[in-house]
Image (cartoon, rainbow, N blue to C red):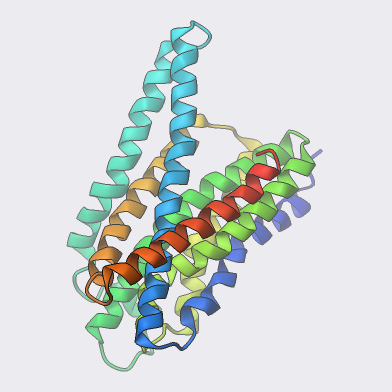
Length: 276
């Protein structure tokens, strides 16, 4: 019998640790340090792309290999392969279409996020748009992490579920920093209500995925969200890099990206040490 109160509490802890990364991105620092922090956020996001594509592709290849060996229907392998590419296209091309159609002007969603803001600072809105897209991509990634937690808990592997929560929690803290990366070089910081909503977009899916994973296992859903997250993160990384390259030297930028990659790999190691 699954204790859903305990399960949902664990899912909430894993997801909402994303808020722990917010203070670092909002701290006051010199322009040079802020540019470095922005590069650090890019490095973390690059790691996430490697991480999500790796997990998705492992699932696809293992299914295709099993299909070729006659262990599972060939249709299963083909379906996952198509799902993988469809998710990437949705993340890359879908966000590009969404940006062109809905995010060029002061969208209603953004007006609600910043409804008490004095004036319409276009640079601030651009940062908010970028942060929102990063949160969407990370949210898709975190949904798949929630699925893993829920499935482990439902299978009775409580120890693994707890280790996943610790590992994903530490990882999500770095993701929180990545979400607010666009504001690292800004003197104007987002309002509290904006921070809460960005955190819910990025961390809330972990909570939802935990619940769904405990009652329904779907490889196609798992691969779709990972692939979408990877495509979406590539989209926002390119946008962030274009801005960052104008703010600092390549030496500072690459040093920050390198350290961001290190942070990502080390936090992911926590999950691996738990046998996940």
